Image (cartoon, rainbow, N blue to C red):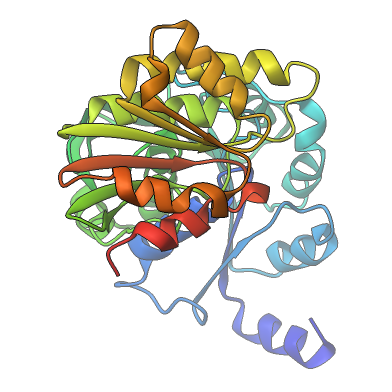
Length: 346
């Protein structure tokens, strides 16, 4: 911010929401959707997302001069598909902890309760903390999760319960984003019904477990933006739970796993064998997904392997049939979004 911008900020003293952690982009979008009908976003309320590594001083200045600063921390660890508790690396919260020290006593700290490393941040502050998660003990808690053409769950807060519908969205990160937005909404005096209604307009971000229409009257579960071992397994498990005539898993390499790359990709293949009818793999590492699926009973006739997207995209189009549900997932470097562009309806 230049000098003039700082003077304007000090005179107006807007409310500031800073969203950080690995789920920050989705959480920011959900928060925006909850607040936009009731407040002037960009004027009375400013919403930022950041990993804080290069902007910590700027954000320290903003929250010190804001009339109401709110710091939202999503998760720093990898979200497991099969349990509601996990932990990240403590070093990943160093900048977050620095920023909490700049928050005034009237500010708010909103934390992912299920990530132990994030939850521990509250032990170092005297701030007003609000937590969210799936575990009992979280202030904002999601229960009774059901999947159809989207995600239904019950939002529990201080004895009150409201249903929440995330249309065409799936996965724990989306639910965490909705919970974080509910926590922010209550700070700004919105009630749970208003928050639930606003979340009907939350459409998520491209490539983040979003259901879109595909060619030949199919549906695409688009998770092409990024992938980790845990997120890909969760996406495959969700693929298996959504009703469809046939399920197709289109998977690229998961990059950055390290020395356990082969074993991790084989483990992904084991889940594919239980949840998909056809498997398409793209990349050298993804061949081990095919290997894992075959070892668990998926026949070679149902597996198609390619090194590059251009080599296999036409074969995929040929194999797709009306009523199919197609999961597309892989690390950002694999550019799996190109496949989404090839087979989406428009």
